[in-house]
Length: 192
Image (tube, rainbow, N blue to C red; front, side):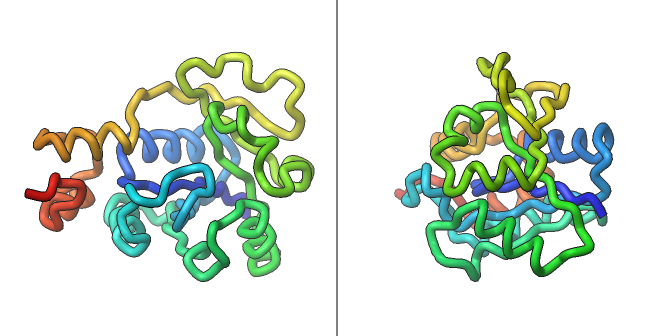
């Protein structure tokens, strides 16, 4: 079974993430898509992250009605910081019947050569690359990767966090259940 792996901190998950996931399932041969919630991306600061269990719960709330999506906490049990190659190797050994592909934004290709064992990732796992603003020619001379024609949405988790901290109400930027839970728990609100 062809399974796409969409890695991210999902801090929080938003409609842009879900639109990309939806596009991947409908316009590629992927049969399932897993949101791999990363405890700590080595390229991001840890201080702004919600606890991993809260981020996983938000993802589960967001994808609840869709059985072809799965939230994965596989990296929670792995050494930190988490590295994509280690997770890919672990999942491939645990699920030999699945063919895994990586879903990444075109902006990530700029730093891809800094990833641990990036040559092994590129050789063993196909990468589906979704466009990000300002990354038009990202696939020149890149092997084992497909640029998908997904619509570009300029929505980010950092924008949502910043807006919530400023007291803004953004109910249409996140799936309803995830947004309501985030509000109930007062995530990202400025401390009085």
